[in-house]
Amino acid sequence: MLFFPEKMMEAYKGAPFTGDGKTMFLYVFGMMGLLMAHGAMMNATMRLDSANATARGATCLANAIGWGIFLCIDTVLAFELPVPFFTNVIPNSMPSEGLKANLVIFAAIVGINVLGWKDAGSPKPNVALPTGVMALPLKILIADALFWGGGCVLAPTKMFDMYLPGVIAKSGAAQPMIWMIIERVGWSVVTAIISTTLITSAVPGDADTNYRVARSWVYRNFMFLGFVSRDNVIRAATGWTMPLAVQSTVQAFGITLFCATQLGAVNITVRKTKSA
Amino acid sequence: MVQITAQKACGITQAVNLLFATGTSPVGPTISFAPFISFFAPFLT
Image 1 (cartoon, each protein chain N blue to C red):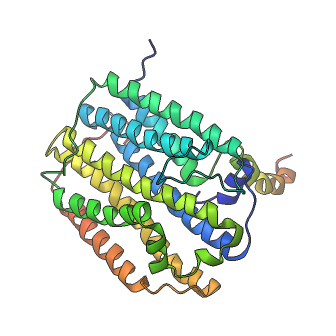
Image 2: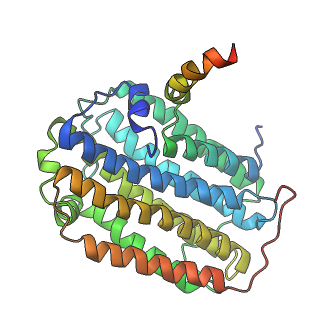
C-alpha cells in the first residue's frame, strides 16, 4: 500500500485509475499502509523474548479483535450484506474475488492469534487507559488517534471536505474505492487504540510494555510527518487546496515532538534479546 | 489440537501487516524487481 500500491492492485485485478482519482486513491491507500505498518511495529516489539509474556498474550487478543473487525466489515462488503453504517456495495473497480481471498487471510490471522492468546494463558485485560511511565504521551496519542479514527469512521465526508475540499468529488470512477479505503483507515486507527489499551492494561503500569507501545506510536508518527511533508509536493503538482495544512502540521509535529522527547527522556533499560 | 505460541502469532501478524503495508503481495516483488533483474542479468551470466 505504501510502496507498491499499483502492483498490489494489479494482484487484486483492480481497475487502474487516472488523474485526481488516481492521486487521491494512492493518497488514502498510503495512509492505510502506514497504519498497517504501525500494526507490524507493535507486533515486532511485543513478539520478542524480552517483552512481557502477559502483554504479548494481550497483543494476540488485540490482533484477533482488530483483524476480526476487518473480517466483519469485509464480509459485509464482499457479500454486499444489508448492514447499515458499513460500506456494502463492492466498487466496480475491485473484483469481489480479491475481497473474498482477503477474508480467508483475515480469518487465518484471527485464528492464529486466538491460539497465541490461549498459549499465553488467555490473559483478560481491561479496556483501560495506560498508567505509569509514558502514560501521558500514550493518552495524548490515543486522543489524537480518536480524533482521526472517529472522524474517518463517523463523519468521513465532513472530515475530507475539511482537509481536502472537493478532491474526492472530482475523483471520478475512483470514488467508491476511496471511500472504502477511508472507512478502513478509520477502523485501523480504532484497532490501534484498542490494541494500545488492551496491551498496556494487561500489565498496568509496566514500564517496559508502555515504552514498547509508545515507541511504536512514535515511529508511526514520524512516518506520518513524512506524509505531511509530502503534501506540499502533492499540493504543488495537483493544485489541490489544503486549508487546514498548517493546523494538521502543528498538531502532528507538536504531538510527535512531545512524545519523542518523553520517550528519549525516560530512564529505562529495555531488556535485550540475543539478536540485539 | 493445533498449538501456536503467542510469539509465533505476533510474528506471523507482523509479517502479514508488513506485506499489506508495503504492498508486496506474493506476486508484487517479482513484478517490481523484474526491471532490476533484467538490467543486471547480462552482467551476471
